[in-house]
Figure 1 (tube, helix red, strand yellow):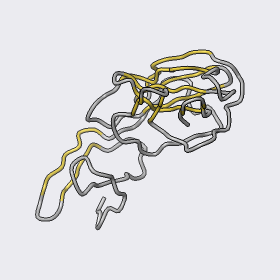
Figure 2: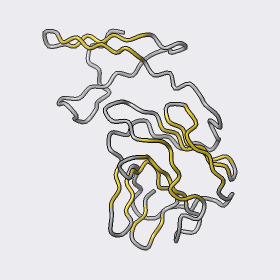
Figure 3: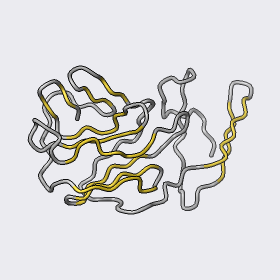
Length: 170
């Protein structure tokens, strides 16, 4: 899913130039002929942000937190099956590396166009964390329609996130 010198895998998604998040798509393995450097939105530091890259035929849509940020036409060519090691959030030109500046969670590829216009991301708001004796109490405003919440933790600030919420009470 990234470009190695002389080789273009089918999909380069979630890479950054330090200002914006982009995706590129190849059908031939030698260029980003379907669409190149398609902007998904600007970078928001220190906040969870939902980016979506959607293709419907030859139309491409970029979303940031459910808001349509860009739209373009490409081709209907099939995406090249990649060779080599797939990578998400990384792009290499042969001389320069571009990285996604943060964590990527719940990456999904679908065979349908899930969105072609603005949609509701339903992110919790007003998160409050109160430290206690070997515990943290979390509270937030309920999200309409939510049937549950995924709580993740890290053992250090900025560390790897884990799903194993020990003795979570929701």
